[in-house]
Length: 177
Image 1: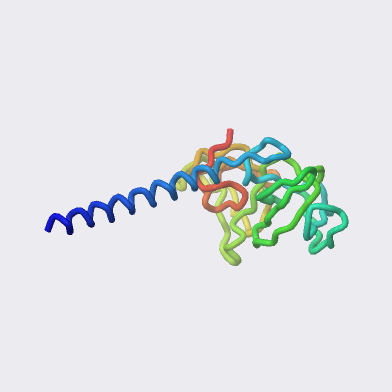
Image 2: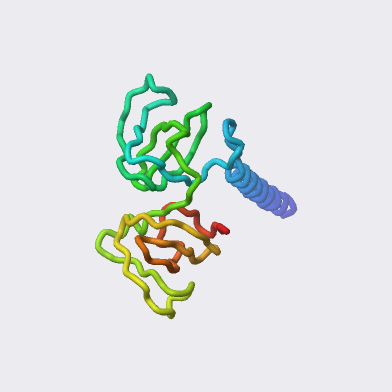
């Protein structure tokens, strides 16, 4: 019997060590700093221009795989190399973009995964407050602030609050001042 208890303790200890290791690695990944910019990676930014080439690799010698044609579109920076940033869009397309074509201005896409359902823009950060507008999927919103559950945004002359979970371009529970 003592041998059996000892094995159970070892097994429990192994699980605890594995869990702590995963937690530490997860924390380390979340706090990476870009080698070129000194800013956190990953992070969201937006496109400065109506024409931004997405390349296979970090140089103009690499083939262009896609051309973004929407200024203000949010993208996620996932890596950095000198003056190049590896980005991912809301559909998962990845490639390299010159850093000068990116802006730190925070924008977000309204629920790109909801094809036929509109999202609601409210007067206050409360679903019981007055509705200001219905926003279609893929509309670009300028993010003013987020408290982890709601974001204050402006969209084509409308200002209000939208649930943070209805935006692509802000992280879950992210706070933005």
